[in-house]
Image 1: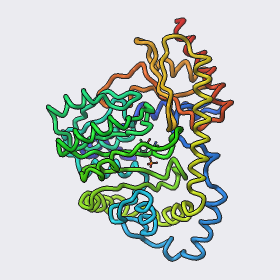
Image 2: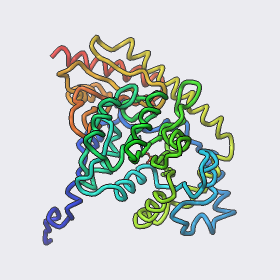
Image 3: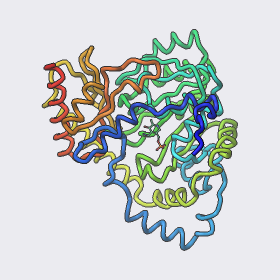
Image 4: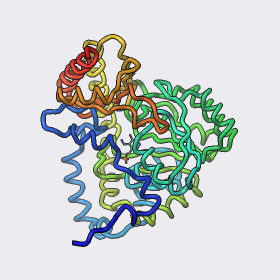
Length: 396
Ligand code: PMP
């Protein structure tokens, strides 16, 4: 057969899209017997399997002509109206997206040109870095930890640069688990308002708090202050099912209109049946469901922290998350998380090395542990294996 040089045929933009080395590494974690803290996969025991089966059958039987037809790009109206009511906005300000991942890509399309500055936390969500990278922006980063981004560093950057937007995950950040305290949220918003800047607030983990309640989002604070520049993203992935791919963006009407136009060219609309199913599922016991999810992750986080406190050698630092799905770990300087990954895989335990979460490089001695997928016993055993791998590496 005749051969083609595919690489010379792809467009300029495609050259920026590359297989992430990390996703290659993560294939190793699927080996049978491996206890994985790697994927950010929600706990499968929390999926509403029975309810979804009944509701999907009823939707198809009673409203099949809607569920199986094309739908509006903005989304299934009753679901937009439900989300609007939940968040205290108007339905026209809500765009349903095919996962928040799609919203990240749409934001890249709408806001970024080649070499546009875009500001991210270091570390930040790898999927966002990947989505934005396709548009060829220039990444500006500020260090972020348990209390979110370093605001003094952020202020310095904003003196020199005017990013097209700031991408932030203020609550239970992926990967760091960080939570921006209320005072810092207020200061952050002041800085943003002063600069007239756009913030993309990714609130995928909004409901997964372990304490008494949520902190107000930047979006909520911005509305109180009468500032239109916060684009809010969240998703049903962590509270119902990631496989349904139903999420939403909430923003000023002009931003929603532009994002909707961009979405039209991508997939016309998010699958109607999935949206109808989500709408049906949130009608019943939703607050109880959220409570159950919080209790499950709270217990898993506790199991992981107890195991880490018991097993980890001196010099290893890790966060104590107040919500979400992740513990973030720092190895002693000079130790490589990728080297630990290889030792760990040999011990049948996996995690994600932290390097790829840093858009500007660095973080080689960091790693992310997800406690979401395994049960308490799996977590304890996984941490035992991880400690063994680490002690092996330290002895080299
Ligand atoms: N944002 C963050 C911070 C995430 O952690 C994830 C998923 N792990 C996403 C967005 C993507 O979520 P979705 O399933 O809604 O596409």
